[in-house]
Amino acid sequence: MKKKMLISLLCCFIFILTACNNNEQNVDDVSNIVTTDEEIYLTIKEGSLTSTQATLILENNSTQDLGYSDSYEIEIKKNNVWYKINVDIGFNEPLYIVKPNQSQELEINWENSYESLTPGEYRIIKDVILMNNDDTHEDFFVAAEFTIE
Image 1 (tube, rainbow, N blue to C red):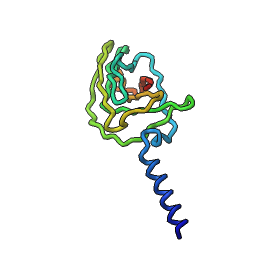
Image 2 (cartoon, helix red, strand yellow; image 1 turned 30 degrees about the horizontal axis):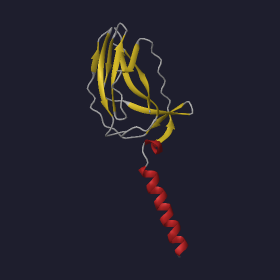
Image 3 (cartoon, rainbow, N blue to C red; image 1 turned 135 degrees about the vertical axis):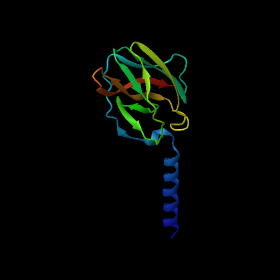
Image 4 (tube, rainbow, N blue to C red; image 1 turned 30 degrees about the vertical axis):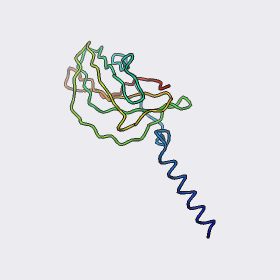
């Protein structure tokens, strides 16, 4: 009886320890997101990066309007493979526009969703929409890679 109780307590302790770990334990899916556009850039403004926030610069060097919303994802790189950090985040979905040959600064604070990021290689991903002149559009992703030390 004491063995069963000890094993049960040990299992509970391991479960609690695993659940309390930061984003390291929430990484499970390999990312399938590919970024390919050569006219749209997402970068991190110099001096703005901390473990809980950053200012992004979304640059539109195309000839069409670019749309984006508040949504974003953060992924972590392990052994040269990008992994999703699984968190549930709700976003407002207004559509913002960046005109051709302009840029927009986006202040992102992920402390309430991703918490403070531990040291490692990360990328922040935004889904954007390139609005073509013929009333069609292209959806794709842009990403900015960064390192937390």
